[in-house]
Length: 203
Image (cartoon, rainbow, N blue to C red; front, side, top):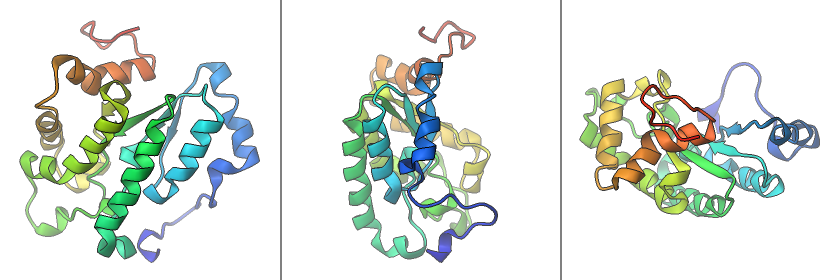
């Protein structure tokens, strides 16, 4: 799709399925390392296959799986949402995968806040992003989800403060334990962080 043209190196199609990539990927688990997967939602089947092929390697899916909403995807939003949701549910069956909740402020997601001429408030963001955030939490559970700022890239749509207030609104109905998972616990566990400055992290 021309809307996603980029300068510089462009990853080849099917990168995660290539033998040389997988030879390198196989070295992560023995070293105690995880892998952050940054893809667009049509590429989620490749992440599913990778996770199934390497069940002992921790994979972090970035930006709720990269839903697209510009170019040819702009007129198919409902259908593409269902395509994304189906893949997210399939991926959640892989216990070695967690998902970062964020990145939806990027241009390719197509929410159009920047084009509106007025910066959104946290309520507007929460309402727009809720279907994606809640789908991920329902599929993976809070213990396998973590909020992310994705700044400065998400500054395309909103301020840092407004972004985190939107996340607080999205988590308003969660229990104290679920909020701990979403805002610190899952990140601390997955990225092996043992000190967050207040003893909040778990080893």
